Image (cartoon, rainbow, N blue to C red; front, side, top):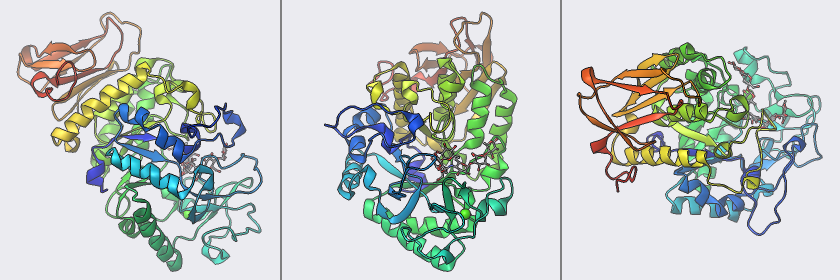
Length: 475
Ligand code: ABC
Ligand code: CA
């Protein structure tokens, strides 16, 4: 599928080893600190797709599927996460058989859902920096690798040619400028995508490969390429990786950072930075409407670890669903998992019982509205604008949907409010799809969100545009 086809999707991110046990296997506990396999598989995912689809997701992103290092346990445990790839021409038998992977993808497609597969081409895992053995790797000759050097972050050349990982788990840097490497990688991705009917790629460590590698590679892949360019609030270093000379899309680290710094409680309450990032993103990204929006992933602390207030999550999450970009929810966020960074943010999902929590229901509502808008209008393509910005929060407009997203958190605050100048005529009827209450646009096109009952998010849809959505009693 193309970037155009992905724009309207919403993605549930899965760590394959941690999402679901294959049916029939004994329930186990999973101690994340042990950094080893807990038993999740592709079959486990397939058997538990209802949970994801009923939440409204239209795509999943799974861990790398290719063969990893299979030697003795390292100082960082075993490659349960799938990123210690050695041979991309084989599948990772820890996650199942070729049939299991095909069955999962067939079942996703039967449901009208997309599969995004994580791929690692920047490096392979070896056990030594001084005398690496490449005999188990896709590229078996040392001439296909850059000589060892540790990465100096902030130095672009070093980030590109030096080795990711460390002495404990060396990740040998593939020489992605070598013409043979380029050709063989191109052949591989073309066949791999076709063979498994993959709809999109999440490209690991994209900024550690020279930019010019990606356009021909992604052309061979023939599907949506979303790169991981790990960054912070600074827009430029991330934005430069999206566009015709780089990738279709990147994960939206600047917006993640800005939402985190504005909404977490306790937190820096930095709403100014969110304003800036939003404005810069608009001018600097090639296309904000296909960026991957997230609040959590397997490399950063869970939201609930940073912020115990559930309303901080709901308001920030609504930004991701109701503004430009493809929303991505990391498995377990709907169960309020609270692990800190790697490896504690990779909890097994099964002990939660896949419960129908308040967060699960909130996400379901967001997906239901977004899917409705995507299926019936060109909403996903319309550019978001900020209508109101203040320390109390923001009002944003995308298409004809206004979201009012406060930073104040759950405790009621008498007098706290966000007033918004709407594009609608006075007396227009709006429905808040979160509470199903009716709102009416007041004099001078104004509306006002008040927080005497606490800082809940508000999503306003012109009432006459709601029919067909199934929301708030419509059919
Ligand atoms: C292992 C152990 C850990 C141990 C670690 C040292 O080694 O498991 O316990 O702490 C995989 C596994 C990991 C494993 C690593 C290494 O391999 O999942 O568990 O860690 O063996 C991707 C994946 C990630 C994956 C890999 C490797 C890459 O999402 O899961 O890790 O295949 C960098 C890379 C990025 C990578 C990330 C983990 O590290 O660029 O591709 N993710 C700065 C740098 C970034 C850097 C980031 C984090 O730090 O610029 O390049 O990401 O280390 C902002 C700045 C940013 C800054 C951030 C922190 O702050 O603007 O630039 O990012 O303000
Ligand atoms: Ca590299």
